[in-house]
Image (cartoon, rainbow, N blue to C red; front, side, top):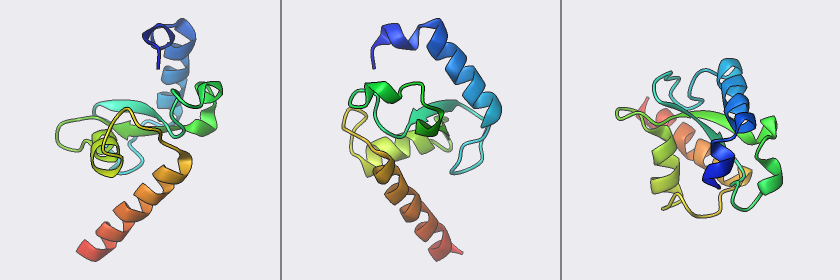
Length: 102
């Protein structure tokens, strides 16, 4: 995603509104180090950058780095193409591991 877009007023406002409506990481519930994650990568789906249905809150904090977990473990990179379907598969893996550990 272009740094110019991330620094734009519109992008910052979108992020503030999303985090107010969705303050917790959807995986672990943390409120520390929250990031707005685009389900469909902005690099490949530029028209969905401000689409609220393309956004989820993830934590990017040292202890629970759910954002990093998705990109580095599941997708092997922050630069590869990610889709809503990838994220759904990731969530199923997380749910399976939680059930297995309980």
